[in-house]
Amino acid sequence: MAAASASKRTPLYSVHRLLGARMVDFGGWEMPVQYSGIIDEHHAVRRAVGLFDVSHMGEIEIRGPEAFQLTDFVSTNAVARLKIGQAQYSGLLHEHGGFVDDVLVHKVAEDHYFLCVNASNQEKDFEHIAGVNRWAATVEFASERYAQLAVQGPRALATLQKLTPVDLAAIRYYHFQDGEVAETPGRIARTGYTGEDGFEIYIPPEEAPRIWSEALGAGQEFGIKPCGLGARNTLRLEAKMALYGHEIHASITPWEADLAWIVKMEKGEFLGRPALAELAQRGVRRKLMGFEMRGRGIARDGYEVFLDGSPAGWVTSGGPSPTLNKNIGLCYLPVETAGIGRKIEILIRGQMVEAVTVATPFYRRAK
Amino acid sequence: MSAYPESYWYTKEHEWVHVEGEIGTVGITFHAQDQLGDIVYVELPKAGVRLEQGKTLGSVESVKAVSDIYAPVSGEVIEVNETLAETPETLNQDPHGAGWLVRVRLSAAEELGQLLTAADYQSYLVEEP
Image (tube, rainbow over all chains, first blue to last red; front, side, top):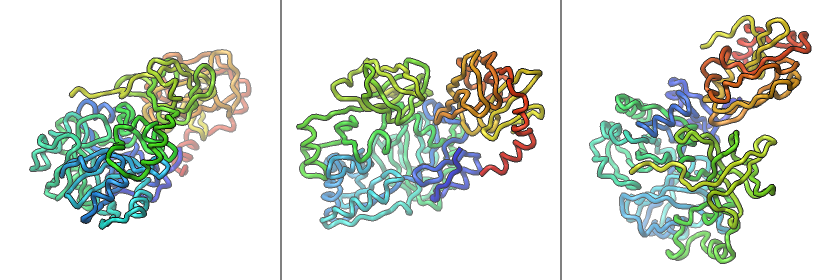
């Protein structure tokens, strides 16, 4: 077991230690991977409610009279479609069409956009956005001003509602509202990375330990559990949500990653668009597919995938699905072979093990 | 904290062996399963396979990772804990008992001298970075 050598800690670090969390290095951050156990925490989120410290995530604020122009230029989704108080999943791309990061764009005001970005990419994202800024807009690296907690699961609303006067039921999915959380000004977004209903709240770092413990208290009657990055990963995999460095990275375009839905070619010029247009015309070579193991074994990211005995692709994420009680995963396959129900083989520690491609997401919550 | 039985021998790779006569029962330690978290899959050799001390015996997988298990002693596998295929969580619940992995007919009992006592192993756990 590698000892955590990470240098960065969230404001909740000592709280995690007190709760007996196992800490790991995650992109330079010393983060809790589990408290009571990944499977236990996973089920808590699917069946009741879980609380995650996601303060390692980065925040970037774009402000100014031309904040829209800059935000729209650096992201693939149509920022013009956002209303104030609405959030949007989007991509930041390199000029060649590969991912810089995947992000959430929140429209705070006509002249103010708030981006939540991946922890390990935050400095890179900031440089990337600031580097192409030719508009009357400022780009602020704002991560130090925010802690972030995720309250996720069917009882997330009931839990968080005890801490805020804001009518949470009135916040629709992928919308947000600024308001008090535990008597502290915060931003409450109905977003998440688990495939369940829930909220992500942005709060002042110095208040995070108190709000964390109040949230645990509020959720106690529902069986709330503190949840680590381990459960966050199994939950997001079941919901087939991309993880930077796995499904998406600099050599992967949205076309391949099954993320064409966050690319709005018709919106006009944006960073990466010419490359995407060319790729669309030439034809995409590979496609992200879900699979289930048929043979015994668990496919992990990086394992090679074979079709009819020949190397054909690689696993991007894989592991047990606690909800489905199956071993599942995502992989890249040549686009012409990437149908559902196709038999594939995965090289697991020297042995070929059978799997079959399946429809995704693996898990979809009942609405 | 789980007690580490005094009568077992331990490795720095967190396996244990309990020797009775010429038969050794092999498992992973409480610390090993605790570090791994929820164990969901165990890969073990078949009876008849000859193990060599320090070489891979099989693997255990938790939700988040896979780890090799190394043979604490050399010898022939005479019995495999088949129940782990269906209930790998036994390894988390009772790592020093019902979660045993294989029974081995020792071929070099002198190898035990290279293993750690319960006291040594627990000191090692404290010192381990």
